Length: 252
Length: 252
DNA sequence: CAGTGGTCTAGACCACACC
DNA sequence: GTGTGGTCTAGACCACTGT
Figure 1 (cartoon, rainbow over the protein chains, first blue to last red):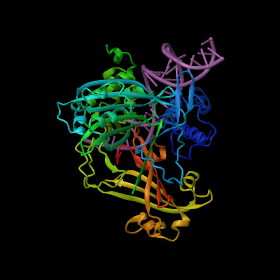
Figure 2: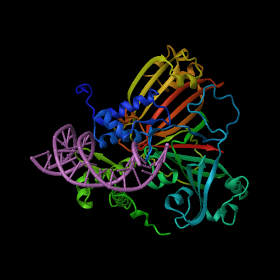
Figure 3: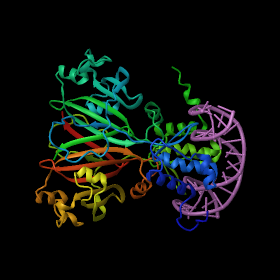
Figure 4: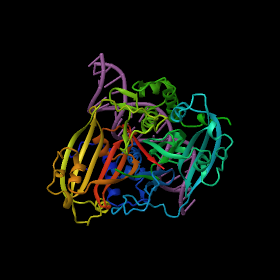
């Protein structure tokens, strides 16, 4: 009880630190239940809001997750691996191993929702595609689900002038998908630029991806270029950061 | 359908939503001061903790920042652009434009702290480098600062057996840096694998990078391979997600 | 049903920023 | 000094989860 002078931190920080250390020491495994608000109030002789604040620290760090009516639990990190560059042509690269388990396993990443519309291009899309501000684009919105859990949303924009009347404007784009259709139209993507950033999700994104507090998203803006440098597709992907590891492999 | 949902929520969510909408509508520009706790208490007739909770929502979304004794302010996003693949050989790629302003400008990214040590390889490092668990590695820790603000930390691990006695083990690795020294040792890196994830920072990382609440970090684990596939360097980079946009450009 | 986390109140003291 | 956000208390009611 008497520990005034050691470190100058606050009560909730001290509680949070002890819980975090216990987790990292393996005293609580992923999925385990942590002491709840009532237990912390009794164990540390603090008010409810103080115990809550301590638990909130861990939640905002993304290492725990609260389930209403059930308790607070240790989260796990079992990411999908997304290979940013597909040419995994079989070299012996990789005497060293990847850091995070691939875990792609046999679980299927399936499309949950598809929505195809046409509208005038948002400004940043028109800019990315090099279109006039009044041009229209085909907008393909999808959500991807893994084992019932949404992990990614994707919105692709393609110039209407390019894809009008093709299967790209259908929900089912047919064998080979959008890129195969673009190839048939003489605009096969041959080069890509991906711009990544990470940030906290909006409330809509958190809802749509089923994200708990303390989970950032990775936003990928990809532009696909055809031979000659024409931008033929612009995509905005939003990934649940707890579900993904991104991998890029390239030569010097 | 009707969008009655905006009225259904709790008090703090309603307050947060109104503030967020006001920000997105441009009523508050980046750097502007928002109504504080006292103002919100009066304006919405709520208790202090409720006003705080509303402001906490925006902070956790990373769109505002609280400065003790001063107020709550709208954050801005002015990222550096990190080109993951340096072969930016001047094609005409890019009829379309990048999404976020590059803003690299003339500001200098400088090394703030360097620390070089030697120790036995942590398990995941030994695995990544294909070393025995008892092997020792040269550990180079650095912090990078932009305009006085820390934006990245980097820890590189190189096999001791490879770099012992070379300038790699000095704080100043000389012209061309570590990779030039590796080349001289006959182990020039010719291929790289970068594994990225995003997560909330630990408290140490938040302190070291000066991150405010609601700012994730991007963690990059890079393995450098020499000709023949030998892993010669493993690096762990931790980036302030508010300071970076990552770009990867590659052929299909 | 009992127990959990989520929301909310109405006070209080503190450290810090700005004037 | 005054006002700010940060911490903390001691209550309360609610919605939800589990059994």
